[in-house]
Structures are given as structure tokens and as C-alpha cells.
Length: 151
Length: 151
DNA sequence: TTTACTGCAAAGGGTTTGCAACATG
DNA sequence: CATGTTGCAAACCCTTTGCAGTAAA
Image (cartoon, rainbow over the protein chains, first blue to last red):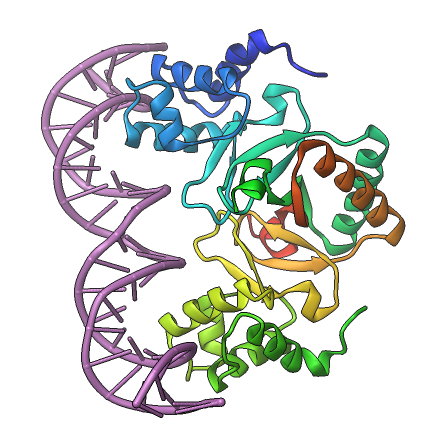
């Protein structure tokens, strides 16, 4: 099931094609930034990673890639939204440690046993409520190691 | 542990006092709006529920109440943030069904067994990463019954 | 050549903030 | 009285959008 890192680009191309969008060099460069990154990134971080990307185009391309299911957007109370490769692309189901002080986000995973127990529960709830579910988010909110000592 | 609905006000007063803030009539009215509401509310909804509340004061008071641990803020990709009573006040540990089309939010709960299995996992992860954890969020993203049929 | 994409600059809009009047202890 | 709160209006700033030029099918 997990997708090898290498064909994230071809996956992206396919998914874009399914939405009648092109996999342009700018979009490729954008996806490349996320492949290289180990954690969700804000827009300034994306542009810092590749200065040839224009702000408005990045926002537009992230929206397009999100609609195509290539990119996932994470919104916290931090100023900037953060973006990462969608799980279907990264092949890496995970959760987030979100620092409520500095807004940084790290990934972590759960034991498969707990993960599937939760998934079953979620499916039951969704069905009972007539809710069509795409995804869940299961994140830890707190203070990262740095911020905990900083204070 | 769960707090009876009735003393949400006194809890709020205590927590505000701990932060050297007053429990003014406006703040009381604001908390009252949340006590009466069954789901997280946006700012326009709060003001619609009590027109005597001024926008900027509500934002400021929500920030104060959030800092005091009385109110919890939920940010989604919807335009407005949503607010609800903090679990310590409502005494009601729950999760959210978030509609990615209309932004509406409903509450739901999990079986205590699954809930505590997840809590244990989270605690372990937090410890290993040096993360000081206050809370977790475990929400379902999808389409509410209305939006699913609407399309 | 037709349609999608890009980038600049400007607009949009939820949230925050300055400040003067007010209430509270 | 001294300090915290309120409300209006203006400022903020992340994000979106208009538009003219450019690349791709």
C-alpha cells in the first residue's frame, strides 16, 4: 500500500490529470519541496526552500493540489496554515504533535492495534450520523521540547 | 470529575481570578451563550445569540477565557474559528464531526475503552518526544448529512 | 490557437489593536 | 482613585483574486 518515495511525482501527475490539470514544472518543484521536507511547512518556509516559487502561484497550486488529493492542509491557531503530502501520496499514515506556543508540527504514529480500533469506532459514529467521512485527524496539542524549557 | 452544568459560571469566575481577570457581566453573558449552545459557535453566531455583545470585546474576551482555560478554540479551514466551553468546564470529553463543505461541527464521543487506549498511546509518544501535552484533538473530517445529499 | 498557468500588485476579510470612555474594586 | 473592560473604528496580515503576459497541449 505505501507508495515508494520515488513515484510521488507520477502519483501527483495522475491525480492532477484526473482533475484536468497539468503537472507543470512549478508544480513539480512544489511537490519536490514537500518530498524533501520531513514536516508540514508554512508558505514562507516553502518559498524559503525554493525562492523561484511565487507566493500567489504557490497558494494557487496548493489549492489545486489539495483538490486533487496530493497535498493536505493543516490549520492551527498559528498564523500560517501548514501543508504536507497527502497520506495517499506519502503512504505514511501519521498524526501530529502540535506545539501551541511556537506552532511547530512534528509527525508520530500509533500502534496499528489502537489505530484500527479508533478507525472502527469512527466508522460506526459516521454511519450513525449520516456523515460521509474522508479522513480523521488525531493530533496532540501541547508544548514542544524547546518551548517547554524556554519558559 | 464532570462539572454540573450549573456551576460553569463559578468555575469560570475562579479560573479568571487565577489570571487576575474579572468575571464581568459581559463575560458572564458570553459564557452563558456557550452554556446554552449544543455545538461550537462562530463569532457571528455568538453575536446573533446575544446582540448586546460587541465584536471586538467578544474576541478579546474569548482570548482571555481561552487563556484562563474556560473556552476552547477550534480552527478549521472554514472562514471563522469556532469556540466552545473547555472540557474542564463542560465536564464533557468529546470529539468533533467537522464538515469540510459547510464547516459545521457536531460533537460525538468514543467508547471509554478506545478513548483510554488512545490516551495511553498519546502519553507514551509525548514522553518519548519531550512533549508537554495539554490536550488532544481527535476529529472526523467529512461531509455532514445535509451536504452529502446537497450535491 | 486555445486553454491553462504564472506572477505582480491589489483587494478581501477574519481577527487584532489604539484609544477614549466606562465600570469595578 | 487606580486598574481592568468596553466599543468604535482603524489597522493587520494571511490569503485570495484581477489581469496581462507566458507556456503547454
